[in-house]
Image (cartoon, rainbow, N blue to C red):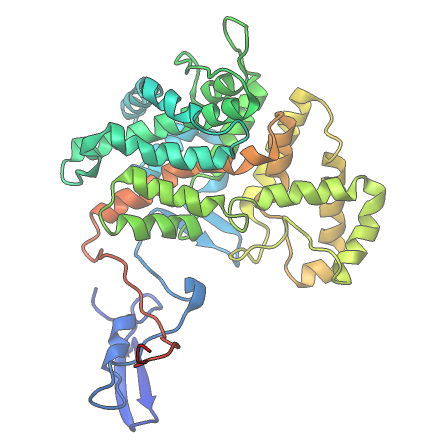
Amino acid sequence: MPTEPGQTLTVRDNRTGQTYELEIQEGTIRATDLRQIKAGARDPGLMTYDPGLFNTAITRSKVTYLDGEAGILQYRGYPIEQLAEKCTYLEVAYLLIYGHLPSRDELAGWVADITMHTFVHENVKDFMQGFRYDAQPMAMLLASVGGLSTFYPDAGNRQDPDVVNLHIRRMIAKVPTLAAFAYRHNAGQPYTNPDNELNYAGNFLSMLFKMSELRYQPDPRIERALETLFILHADHEQNCSTTALRVVASSHADPYAAVAAGIAALYGPLHGGANEAVLRMLMRIGSTGNVPAFSESVKAGHERLMGFGHRVYKNYDPRARLIKKAADEVIAARGPHPLLNVATELEKRALEDDYFVSRRLYPNVDFYSGLIYQALGLPLVMFPVLFAIPRTSGWLAQWYEMLSDPEQKIVRPLQIYEGDRDLTYP
């Protein structure tokens, strides 16, 4: 991409007096351009030190646009508010992966293909049975998704578009099945096979909760609330789990291994466990009468306000408003939730308090999502699993985009070595 006139950065190295002109493209300089800046002949060149990659762009992407200052989230240019209101999750998944909203025929074919692949090989059930009765569902999902590549020897074929697209469909179809199996195993219940007469969200609810009834009929309000959650969690730019997927996929690992890497990153409490932390906080507060004292304790530094603020968003997370609406739908279907009033009062108080407003601590996507999952009757250990199901489409969109990226290379960062050197073995 050509550099616009005047779009350069002049750097003077005060060690040598040398001046360098670096190109600026879309607000970035290429890190490798710094390697020409050397203090001497044996100097390998300047590099950047950026723990956590907080100020490093690792790719060009057309999947998700995020403006944290303005509180904007868009998938392929479409505002998240419009997609959550008007689309199904599978429609959004198609948009993320292929870059455009599907036509009526494309959507029908896409849904039919995914529905056809919801069942898993019977040996997968044997594999799941090998876990302890109290195994973490997220760990089971991680292992079983990674294990899927053993059933599909052609999974590493990146050259054949038909093969690539088949595995994309397989994974989106099978991850809810594996997630439901993990839940049922943890609960000591027999696995429930998919019901392909139901839609994506309804089928997942059936696999979770169907018992002795001939047909499970999900409440349409709960079904739609879950669909909304899936849409809101589908992608979120270059976060920890997406970066983990890109790092693993850069070695040309198959998509099952790459998605398993994303699940492993999401398993961490700093990433996929945030809504669980919110729920524990609300349970600790207990009632609306305790909210003022808790708020003051936060300001005094004795408590942490979970579910407020975000590494990226410095405004109201656009997903939070939509999730609050979904929470209201679930509560209407399932009956009053004792913690909803606590959450509402805490949000109201925080948004009216200069201490929190001045620090730009607004509710984020995790603040109400845990309430929805608990209202559905799901245990805390299932919360990150419910995050991983929709994020699979976002991970696959990022993986699919990588396949055609001409600049894609195997990820190999540098380090600053601080250890001993040239020791002699005694």
